[in-house]
Image (cartoon, rainbow, N blue to C red):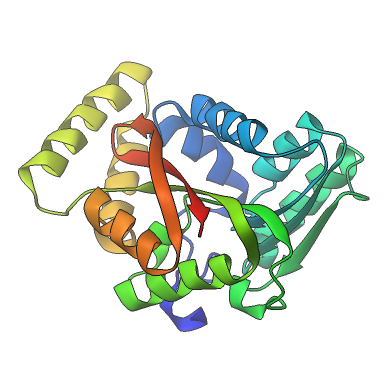
Length: 234
């Protein structure tokens, strides 16, 4: 799958050290979305749990979740050495190294044992161009989860070229203007979306989740072009 996902070290749409700042500007409700992710996890997990974070990125998600519960254990996996270097720095800074481990690579590189009580994939799958590769990505996560484990997926969603998504993007541009995002950054984000982001419709997203064994999917978050779903391994 490594040739079917954007390489954030050699061809990143956003520089690693700018990713978190740009995500906050580009995605309405970015902070609230992470709060909802934590709420979903708290509602389903016990005080002791083993979590898999796919696309660990710059470490914001790992640190926030790690600070939220002192007995949760985490493995973060990400193909980008640059992003993981930032994550490692944050994990060390917040003294979470004993409970948070990180691995450079893809979820398919991990052992197949279904040992995780929950997994998250936040703003990752929409960078995978091919639908079959998206399916393999979700299958790789499902295989490593215990039965009834919680999976949280957050991604840009919609059908490119559809009137609904075009209106959403127009609203998003108005939102960026209201928040003062510079025009060059707006242009960069739209160019990246057009050439490097591969969203699915909600119906197709739910179909793929069901194909790999996730059921009872609930959309818990919507931020214009970003949706968040929680589902459970059958």
